[in-house]
Length: 257
Image 1 (spheres, one colour):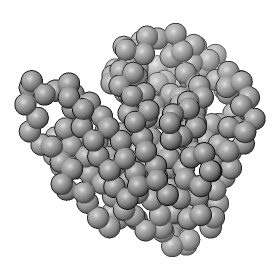
Image 2 (image 1 turned 120 degrees about the horizontal axis):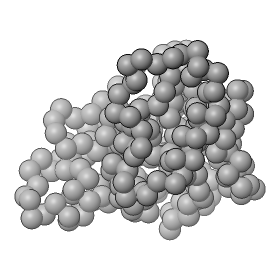
Image 3 (image 1 turned 30 degrees about the vertical axis):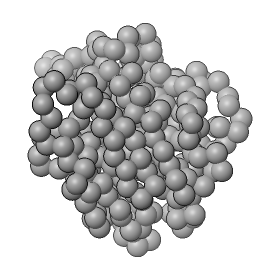
């Protein structure tokens, strides 16, 4: 399993006074920079990670070298960007020998070159043919995509969307959604992935106690399409954290070569 080679301990802001909660903090590491509201997180941990050996097989691996920034507010520091959110920078030249990562890079580059209507991806399909690019590797199936749109910032062009991954067939709960941005620099040489767990409005907090599993499976696609419709219709401020907060972080990202 991949381990961090360096921690940006100096970025930790462990005690932010109450009157400063709406201030803006900044963080940077080896070409990756961003800003974020102090009310979103009080601390950042940075990682500079070497690429895995190509025969280093584990769920989600092997992965190429990357630089990462992960958010948190209460110790201990996170071990994964899926805990409270984070941003990862991958140089495209470092991904050549990593087939899955390279496939995601190629897929995003094609989307940005052609700019098809992303509404067609906000459906469900048995063969996962409608998947949108997503890094880092998540060892489960991407079961839906909602609120998909193109995003162009001063540094990056990409897509953002809300998604969920699943290894089984069961109803969605509010806390298992992810907001993501997947982007490339203008020269196509640097890939930036941001992932934030979000709690979505209108979904239950727990799995139903008396689920009729056969009836649920019989209308699975209808259920997923209803879920996508609900996510698309929801006010972005009713997600936790608010999607506008996450959008502001995306807009702030800098990605130097």
